[in-house]
Image 1: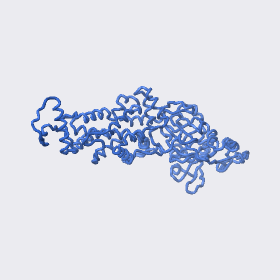
Image 2: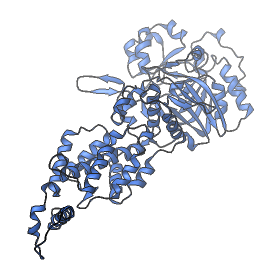
Image 3: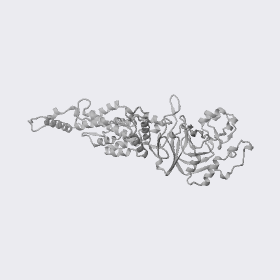
Length: 529
């Protein structure tokens, strides 16, 4: 950059500009480079070493606020090549990026977070040679331009492509499960497979600059989900800084996440939206919904995707160890308590059923014993459970205490999802609506099964009846083909009729997202929460 030709180039420009302002006599007809030395301005002399020094100064005072900022920092501290500038200034790629950044407000973001005004001014200075010896010296301007273009580009393009917030990192470090002076363990709350903004993703974005593919890459990064577009339109009509504006911004962020599977990829699926406390069952053009109960604020229902593969009628409930320790262990040895709740104890290693009076509280708290609730009337899982693979041992199921369905706040469970209309859901999951199978499910869900199998053990003979029509009983059915299930969290989401409705922020996730998005929002927007 500091070649003699660069010096000559700037000197000639300054010489001819001066010649245009006044009549200049030219006594010499042959000139050497030294003859122009007096016209050369130090503030217009390009120097790559000084540009890098200026970038390092910027890095020392510019605190990273989002993941993209740390990538930019590492790139320039690692002596990465200049991406946007050369000895001729900055070419049309910078203009392309500015054109793309025109839409940041439509995305719910703010221009100041993407240095748009500063980039525009510095491009003008470079192209009009408007430098001075202070804050706008050529190397300072070129350094600022190089750094801001890279920072703004990665913030916007990678953020729109993968999301500005990593939900797995944020939500899985939210609720403390256990801690000591050196270690903290958190409850896992988010387990939706998705693509993240990896180092390779950032490297790919940087390669697009040298290939002059900036515009194409940014345009491809913008979300195209129909609900995202719908929320964009709603955002335009919503006053900035209001709670409703913040709600829209948070739900738009959720739609940026590159999750591996989404409902729109399937004809038939089940979707549980936690804030609405409702379940949506979709089969082509047929859409129906029902109320559900989800986890409490302390025992949140995790967000996940899976496939329902089986439904069990009159299931036994293996009670989680946390509930045993908190609520059951203190009743060790109390046969009456266990009988009233239809609990029994089984040794894990042998599989044998143990007498209640033979098992102490410490034994119940150990990993060697299980407390199980018999299937049938009064079981906490209700009469039917819908099973799908997941890392949390949560399911959709019926309930023995349906009174809470009349409440608005239906955060009542330890994490599972309780459904209001279990028979309707079972019928929906069946591939063919075989009336005989439906009749068997309905009969089995209402029959007194206390005289069967494990349920009959230890019961008086007069309580064991033979009134069951065993030919109509069914205990388990495979769901074939498996039906995708999505447990999501949207505080703005269409109902079964397609009407966009708002829901309370049941677990406070909107507040968490908004806090993470703050660096990208205008200062006047910060009142929203």
